[in-house]
Image 1 (tube, rainbow, N blue to C red):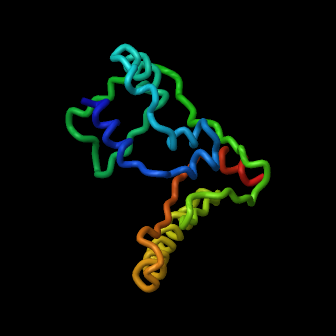
Image 2: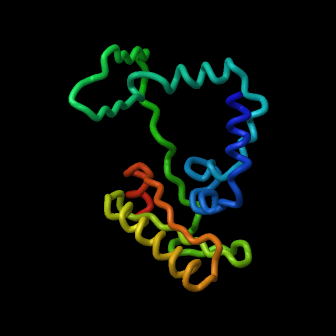
Length: 159
């Protein structure tokens, strides 16, 4: 059933080439590729992966409220924290540009990981939709998105 859910989710993703163009075919760029290995994945493969990732060293818990919920237990085995993917930079220089599909304009940049980036993204998305779709009728899809990456990745890109 889980494989079917993943297949359905993959079928709803269309043409998002920016991650692979920006980050290459690994790390953050891997999300732009189909899930080629899904058909051959076994329950044993999943168990090995879960044993490595679902451990105390890799867990975080956030609770809102004055106290812990009654009966809450976090019985995770000991294990090492798994680091996020390393950043990669296949572009020889930045800024740079790559040709894309006709009629599409996509912009990708790295900014400091701050609340201001999230706020700006929301305002930009609203204004893009208003100006390009509602007022100008120039685009059916006009949006902005903000995907936080780990700090080292951002520092690596800024150099």
